[in-house]
Amino acid sequence: MDKFWKYLPHSNYATKISTSIVYAITASAAVNFFYEPGNIYSSGVTGIAQIIGTLAQSAFGIKIPVALALLLLNLPLFILGWFKISPKFTIFTGITVLLTSVFMQIIPVQVLSTDPIINAIFGGVVMGAGGGYALRNGLSSGGLDFITIAIRKKTGKTIGSLSIIFNSFILLAAGLLFGWQYAFYSALAIFVSGKVMDAVFTKQKKMQVTIVTSCADEVIHGIHGKMRRGITIINGAEGAFRYDRQKVLITVVTRYELPLLKQIMRETDPHAFVSIADNVQILGRFYEEDL
Image 1 (cartoon, one colour):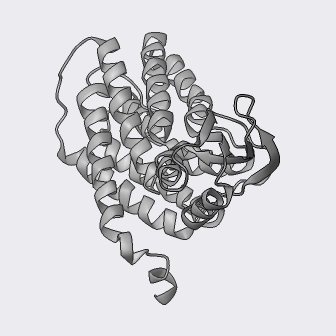
Image 2 (spheres, one colour; image 1 turned 180 degrees about the vertical axis):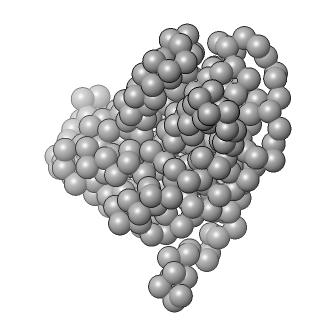
């Protein structure tokens, strides 16, 4: 039992649970308010659960709740998450999946619109925002997130892009089984969800920062004191206007860390020239916090 409790971060326990609840509500709203009324299939294991439910109903007359299928399909994937990502991440993801299944069963299906395009767009926005928010706080919706996060650690590809690749198989299955119009609308929903998830989950986006400063020691001390980032120093830089001697500092941060970097620069050298290149690729070592 002691081994179990050591993985629970007691200091931010309330934050993790509240994030799980927020995701559970948003995912349930996306499925019950937009996807189910519009016959649109979600991304990941939720989409597979929908397909299983539709097949069971049409072929055998058996109604399998999406919530139940979602919970059962996630169970074997928890093993992958435990060994390939982290036990702490897997424990709280399990809580998230359980809460999602409960809310999906409690919240009734509501027809807000009969237009499948509206359902696809708004359902994708709600689902992507919830998924990105969960990942941003060290959680996931389970299912294919375990696989995509494990691959991202090896390749550096974004979560949303990997999700789109994997979910193409769900679209193919939906098109072959139920008609290609459902596949096309579901593709729109998955694309929107993936892009919104990338926009919200900013920890995966890397930015190269070039700092021209006359207070290099103060800036370096500030960055190292509040961020775990390496810095390359270029000595002997000279301004072309006043010919004053300065140093150039080069580092890479995530978009999530950018507000903290701006605060450090205001405190250490508010007159420094800072250039930021968005969405750079990293080939060497780059520290990422454990999930």
